[in-house]
Length: 206
Figure 1 (cartoon, rainbow, N blue to C red):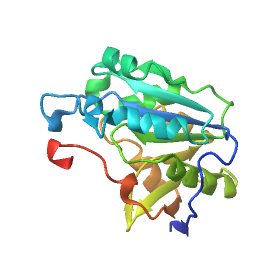
Figure 2 (cartoon, rainbow, N blue to C red):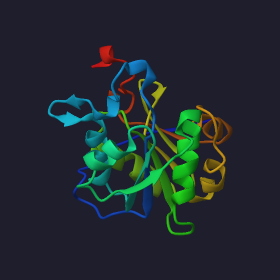
Figure 3 (cartoon, rainbow, N blue to C red):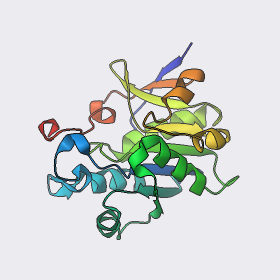
């Protein structure tokens, strides 16, 4: 049975960095979006992916890895001004699971307490919301997966304890880490904001 808690909004600039590595998945080809890479499409003056990276880098994570694949050179140019480590997934066509595995393999073992996994197409994500997830993780001893939700629907970013790295490294296909989450007893965190589920798949989603 899932544990469920509610969070308090946190100012992203009030606390110090935590021992957490973030993996931002930015390797897909946006098949459902059309003939453009959705991550590079501008919304309110800033590309989708950059908005996500800005939120994550302004949060309490210690390090950020961006997994690239499709359009990797343009993605790297876009994020060149951010403190981000790039990891290229040569198998990105096989699905998101391979990108997650690629990112997990790049994480320095025994260096972090948690791995924050975030999609690259959450344009309304805020650093304060990322910090809610981190706070729930730390307050519960950094031992449990934390899944944010809004009105009963799970979203991203999801925070995994470091001892899940080996399982994340084995991800394949396009299912992400849902199977791992289902098999665990995660903390389900009501963040009170739909930004965690407002991803972009099609142009109509704008």
